[in-house]
Every structure is written in structure tokens, then in C-alpha cells.
Length: 332
Image 1 (cartoon, rainbow, N blue to C red):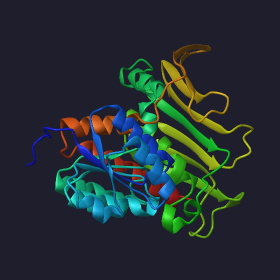
Image 2: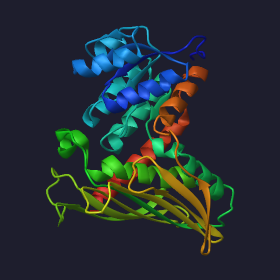
Image 3: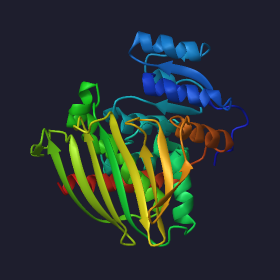
Image 4: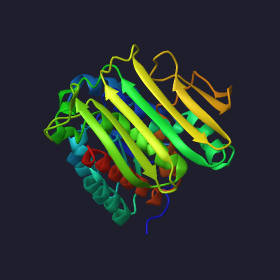
């Protein structure tokens, strides 16, 4: 068995586009880890990342990165690469923090978690909405029993723009459309907050306003109903390029026998949320913007890595969410 680290973990950053660079900056800002290597096919991205980590070694690819003395690898590459790259890093004895989705389906996700368990290395996924102040307050209300018996959850994520990279629209590379891109956050919130698995699923997926047909097409609108183990009904809707009248519609509402709670984005923002605790017609604000929450999942992983790099069984949650997504696709 490996021992806890006695120095700051040395990390390699594979993919330093906007999101990879943002997560790198968040991790380095803690002072708990150091950037030892960076890799990206874009010279411009390398230049910008090197400005944040001037002492990091620029390497050509993952193989060159794994040849270095690293404790972990942070992966922000296209989705099709996530599982294989994560497994290679884990088998090389490195902890991994990966952008979502960890795998394009449950089988890929299970393989990554199995590799982490076999290597006894910490595995994290960038499920950042868990770390908003609003969701943390709602979790306290639900888990503490303030809302009574939870029986319904409504979850919405409409993005008026959709992704700007072509590979998102290729099922072989992305694993799916708006469900894989946005719905993964919604399903994760429902399962993480309640601690329950999914018992049944029904779903309808659309592409260009038509029911999803060919499996090589990705959906741009999805609606699903999930029933959790304790008969909690979860209604989920997500989309790209919906005529929603604003940049984004993001909402998570939790309803119990003694009250409700809602986190809702402000004026179409992707980043600002107001959260209320609701009783009847009364709503009490329990969290409000502004807050810098986007890098908190990365920071959480960095802190855990600095404390103990060994496998954490919470990674099994990633598999449960991936199985639920598979069922949403299968039910369409």
C-alpha cells in the first residue's frame, strides 16, 4: 500500500484550453500542488498556460508526461479520450482528475474506476455544480430532514448556444449530445444529494425538433423522468440552442413534505445563482451571487490528493451516474 505524500503533489495538465487552464489556475491557487508538466496541441494554449506555471515542463503528449515524476494528471481533452487516458495514467500510478464525462458510457466509466481501485489512486471528476453554495445549502436541508420526506426533484439545464467544437456533435467522439454534456450534471445532483440510485427511467430525445432516430445523431433536446430507490420522482430537461429567451435556464428544485428549495440562475447567467428555502408561498434566500465556484471540484480533489493519494470509494458514484445516463439513452 502506498503512503500519504510528504511533499506538494506534482501534477501534469493534459489539455489546457479554457476549462483546463481555469482548473489549473484554481488548483495552483491553493498552494497545495505544483504544475510540473503541461501538454496541448495548441501553441496558443501552451503559451497561456505557461504564463500561469512558468516552471512547468512542456511535453508532447501523455506518454511523455507519464515518464516524469508526477503524482497526478489533470485531464481536459475531448470526451472520447477521457477513459483511455485516465486508465493509462492510473496504471502508471498517477492520481487522476478528469473533465466530465469520465467515460462515454457506463462500461468505459466502470473500467476507469476499476483501474483507480486496482492502482489505489485517487480519482476525481469535474462535477462542479455540487460545489455551488446553493447546492451545499440545499443538501443540508434535504439531508438534515428540514424539507421532510423528499418526493420530487425538478432539474433543468438549457444552453441557448450549444458547444462550439465539432466533436461534440459526433456521437462516436462525444458519447451523446446535451444529456452527456449537461444532463450529466443534473443526474449527478439528484443522485449525489439524495444518496439514492435510479430504479426506473423513461425519456424522449430530439434532434432538430424530431425524435432522435439514427444512433449516430446526437440529441439537442431531452426530457426524462427518473424514479429513485425511495420513489423520489426526478424530472429532467436539458437542451442546446433552445429558444428560451435568454442565454441559459438552469434550475434545481427539491420538494419535500415540509418544504422545498430551489437554486435558479439569475437573468440567464451560467454562473450566478440565487437559492431559496420555500415554505408555502414564502421564499427565504439562503445563497446568492456572486461566488467563484467553477474551480471548487478541482480544488477539492487537489486538497484530497495532498492529504491522501489513495483510492476513494466515492468514485463508485461516477459509475452509478453513467448507468443512469445509459438508461436515458436506451429509453429514448
